[in-house]
Image 1 (spheres, rainbow, N blue to C red):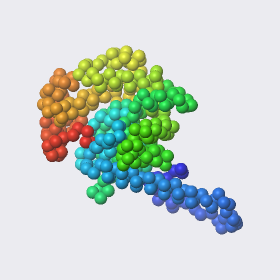
Image 2: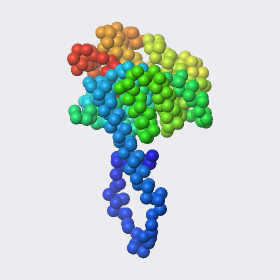
Image 3: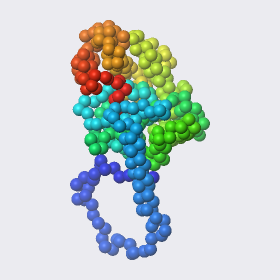
Image 4: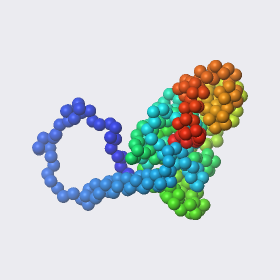
Amino acid sequence: MPDRPNLREPRSPAAVENATLPDHDDFPEPCAMDASAQTLPRAENSADATFAAQRSEMARLIDRHCPTLGRRETPLPGLVLFRGCVADKPSCTVVTSAFAMIAQGAKRILVGNETYEYDAEHYMLATVDLPISSSVITASQKEPYLGVAVELDPLKIAELAAGLRRNPPSGAVDRSFGIGRVDVDLQNTVLRLLRLLDTPDDFPVLGPIIERELLYRLLTGELGSRLQQATTAGSHSQQIVRVIQWMRSHLEQPASIDDLAELANMSRSSLHHHFKALTSMTPVQYQKQLRLHEARRLMLTCRHDAASAAHRVGYESPSQFSREYRRLFGAPPASDVAGLIAASGGVYNANAEAR
């Protein structure tokens, strides 16, 4: 499918002013167009119409199966729907290895110090667990933000990637988070997965087939190397993934750079370089954000007070915890949690923040 025009990059006034038309003599004599030239515009229009029709059907399906704001798990394992509105305050969460698309609206996501935006013509791909801050930037009551996410299974990705005739990933480490451009084939795959919501009895047979096709589309797409790197045994990305998995399951334990480097089988400098290349954060920054997100979850869903939550995630100093919590979430622990609970009507769902 030909690239659609980038409406965010209009031509500058200078470019328009300096544009010139050829002299009359430079125009070729009129001639009959061949058949391929005559059909090309119709093919382009047909592809654009197909893309728009797919997107509209996706929006209708998400709107029907996710009628309220927030996150909604579906009967199809790993398939999650989202509905959102423009929020004054960004939401913070830890995104797992996942693929996400927007049928309507747009979002802004902050990973470390890097900002990403994506809309219905783009998709989001995360290949490792990452602390992020996100906000809906395009939505209205009439046209809410509507999104879909599919949780990715690293084992299935590795199995499929091993069977593809593709070059092994290079030694370089790409970002584990990226924004890619949606094409008709990828969007059609997601649409067929969403259609199973209307025919759940078909999922046991068709679900795994469509899921495998989705992984194939992602692996062979523009961000495919990132998926392959994160699941290829022995790659630098896979070594960092091993460190991340350990950090997530041992939040309360102190972790020195020497210990993490040994776990990754890397030198200290190599660990620092590759970890930041993959996550856009240093190991210390990453661990800090993981701890603060988990402490927030404990206070919201398990009703821990700030001191006990801080201790559970490895903080020895309550004042340091409060200071770093406020820096990340914009308010002291007690105020932040009280505000979130009040905004949710007294029953806060930690998974309700839209991806």
